[in-house]
Image (cartoon, rainbow, N blue to C red; front, side, top):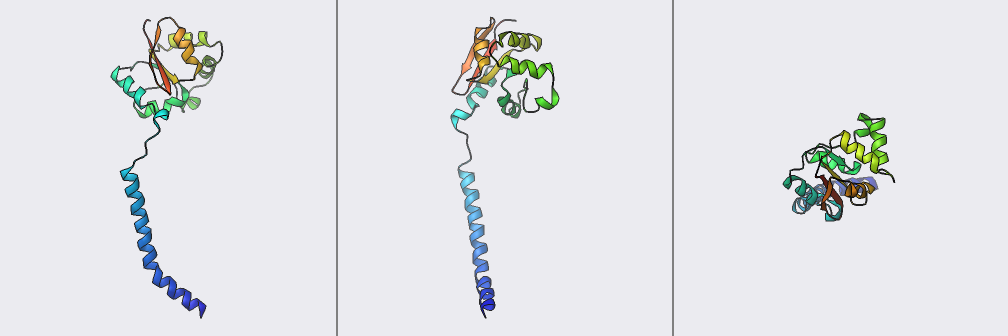
Length: 155
């Protein structure tokens, strides 16, 4: 009977399949343990975080939206992050967005004054970097392939 033959084959191979499943799981765990995931250097702000810590940049920060999560994860209080849309509405978000548009220099000046910003970190291609670079009392303190950090040099 074919059904009996199938049951016999399944019964014989079940222990072998269990052993193979465990072996594959152990191999996967060992592989991950020996070679942990490390983001590509060009996508990591690890060096920028080291600069922030070394230079004790702990005052109010003006940061890029997409950098908020990694800053929070590293214990840095952000200007905004992914929670901002739920926490702040109205002029706060409109000003932040306007600061990233052509002609946003005056908006940034207002933000850094109003919120007493002492340093800023934005992705390298963010237009806000060019505005900060030309603002009196600010200087570019750090740059890598991914981000630029500006610090306030005068009130």
